[in-house]
Picture 1 (tube, rainbow over the protein chains, first blue to last red):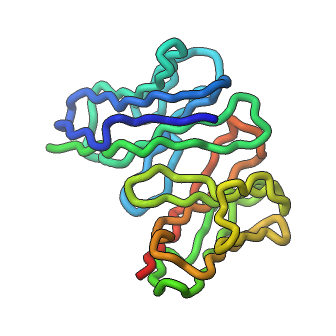
Picture 2 (spheres, each protein chain N blue to C red; picture 1 turned 90 degrees about the horizontal axis):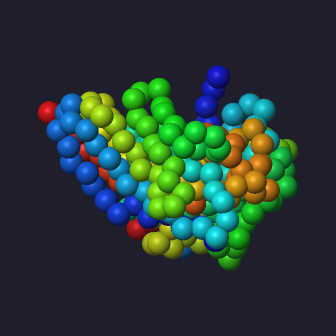
Picture 3 (cartoon, one colour; picture 1 turned 30 degrees about the vertical axis):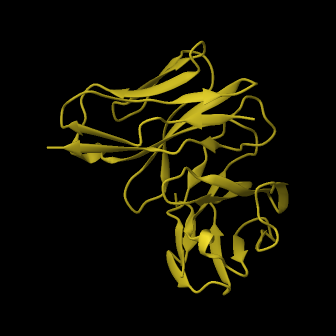
Amino acid sequence: AQSVTQLDSQVPVFEEAPVELRCNYSSSVSVYLFWYVQYPNQGLQLLLKYLSGSTLVESINGFEAEFNKSQTSFHLRKPSVHISDTAEYFCAVSEYGGATNKLIFGTGTLLAVQP
Amino acid sequence: EAGVAQSPRYKIIEKRQSVAFWCNPISGHATLYWYQQILGQGPKLLIQFQNNGVVDDSQLPKDRFSAERLKGVDSTLKIQPAKLEDSAVYLCASSPWTESGNTIYFGEGSWLTVV
């Protein structure tokens, strides 16, 4: 079974400052890793995912995440945030090579960008 | 390309009443999911369909929840009778295939309040 821990429920940050949202996972098997973003009153949207290959993955809007197998982490970072990045961010895992596509989510981190 | 459509967006019912949510996935997507998102928690998978067959319903409270996808396209999730703890956002999602690693596309959700 897999589990995901997002220790920070809220992260306040000023506009143009860097940010890191932490994600750790636990699994007895290899996993795929995902970050989803949920803007107010909207559904979840995929931000980025790690399936294989380079451990550093990037999104089109400047976020990046690095898979660290030894630390079982997949932290999300952005060097300079904008007001529009204010949203809830969910880290998720699914079983590598699994027959189903079941996602196990963390509890989410609210990124609150202040002017 | 149209996204995942859900209705109704908002519903308020009294406990012990029934409610039904409808979902139309992205055209051509074989796999359909229903997730439950309780306030302050990450989404939890209730049921996963591959075409019109159930792949995983291990976390569906079958004494009160039911779901169907009769023609392998749209789906209905029903709760009867509702309890206070069923207050949540019900997210429908779809993906092209069942295998893990596929990107899952979420609808905007159906917000249920049980009073």
